Amino acid sequence: MCGIIGVIGTSHSASLILEGLKRLEYRGYDSAGIATLDKNTINRQRSAGKISNLEKHLETNPLTGLIGIGHTRWATHGPANEENAHPHSDGQVAVVHNGIIENFQKLKDELSDCNFESTTDSEVIVHLISYYLDRGDNLIDACRKMKARLKGSFALAVISLKENDTVIGICQGSPLAVGYGNGEMYLGSDSLALLPMTSKVSYLSDGDFCILKSGSVQFFNSENKNVKREIKELSIDASSVSKGSFDHFMMKEIHEQPQVIRDTLNALIDSSSRTSDLSQLNIDINDLSKITIVGCGSAYYAGLVSKYWFEEYAKIPVEVDIGSEFRYRNHPLPDKGLAIFISQSGETIDTLYPLRLCKEKGQYILSIVNSPESTIARESDSVIKTLAGPEIGVASTKAFTTQMVTLAVLALFIARKRNHLSEKKEQELVSALLELPEKISEILNAQDSINKVASQIKDTQNVLYLGRGHNYPIALEGALKLKEISYIHAEAYASGEMKHGPIALIDSHLPIVFIAPSDTLFSKSLTNIEQVSARGGRVIALTDEAGSEKLNGLHEYLIKLPKAHEFVHPILYSLPVQLLAYYTAVLKGTDIDQPKNLAKSVTVE
Ligand code: F6R
Image 1: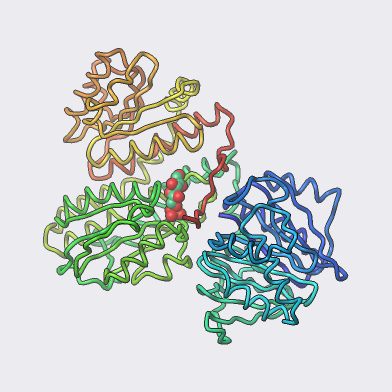
Image 2: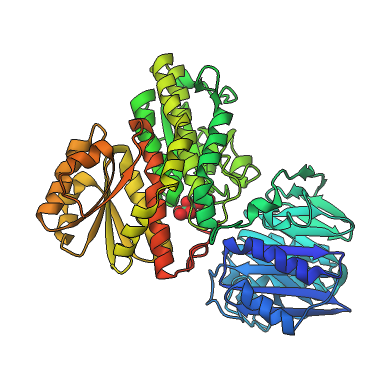
């Protein structure tokens, strides 16, 4: 949700900021801008729309200066136009902001003498800093006083004519990293943005304030104490953030699934005994009373799938909730409860706030995250990393499947520790997981049937996805993927629910995607397929060889998948729904990696 970047100590500041912004574009792409400090003037260039617009603009209006800040916006307050694009500036101070200032209207009323140029919540920060500077404060004190007045979540980068050798970074509820160069210093919403410039970074803790000068940085915590923040060496290779030979990050990331699932499994499984190995978890598993799982979007669906596994194998009650709903319910959370938070970015505010609530209520906090340095990871009692690597496409693919893989191993681990799973059965289930990379590669090598179905649904207005048992969340995920990247309306139901309402929609136009592997519930799915077919509905069946033999021509299209153990069906059947959404979006010509209105990291409520 908005990306910010700061650079100090190089005459190439504007071009480095532009490059950094391109890497942060996944966080928002409604508008972009850069401000630099040059010979005691603040110069700014801003453009509505994507960073490519700003880039074109900079070709004819270049920015110079040793110090600069930049921003890519996901609009919250005010339309996505140039006036609302960051950096905001009054000529004396320039600011970029990620987050939301909840009390901006009150502050704006107080500062009514100032000339507000935008309708954003962020501009108030500029005028507040100038207010304190005009009354004699130095930049650091002015920023401290400004910070104390703000309510909400924010990561900020500030420059000012008053101290033209400084960039100030402030982090409260939104992430910020400092990068160390050769005499140059950098600030960024995440370390990926800094990767081409440096592999040495420090992460600000919540409430931190930092002062960047050429070649140095000082950190202060929320109590204004000078503190040290560890310098970490990034292990990510800069090429992992490029598309390689693929047209889109999403397709590249879909193809990475065999490898990242293998990597994730290798870290969680003892290969010699073929059993789960999560001994690093410091939880008293036998005493667990309940598992609460929270996530948003695809991460929530991964949690829903795991509910079936935890209940089936570990025999433990599980409640799964959407982050934005969980926080506003009054839960009777039990003693000795385990709360699991699932997030690719580790920064989703709707997931983070329930985490804090569960912590207050004495739950053991375990997070499953793809960004180990994220706020959610840092605030958890234990963390299991999904080893998906950087996911740049806004639609989650490899992060989603590695989340499910991780939850599957966790369910087996808890099941065995609670004596509900024999070693032999565990080995059978672990073997099924270990076979996944090969089976996924088989799907990736035979995508024609999926592409063909995409050409049949690309012009439709609506698609219905149906699935049963642990495949029901995959129907939800399929509908979400299709909606977000092709803009076709899609809905998902548990197959059995169809007759309780959605059946009214069936006609010869509505495509209905059945996630129907030949599992223990297949005969029930077949009944639903028959119900659709009897009403002239268009059945797109996702099943295996055995399932396809029983379809008896009830389907219009068939996407045949390799036979696999029932336990891993939700993971395997994620592939065709990802690919179907992808090919449909390609045919529709939408912006697949950056669908409209969306952002990769959602750090506002
Ligand atoms: C869907 C998608 C979103 C995210 C959700 C949670 O393709 O990407 O639904 O899954 O916004 O994000 P994280 O996992 O970063 O908490």
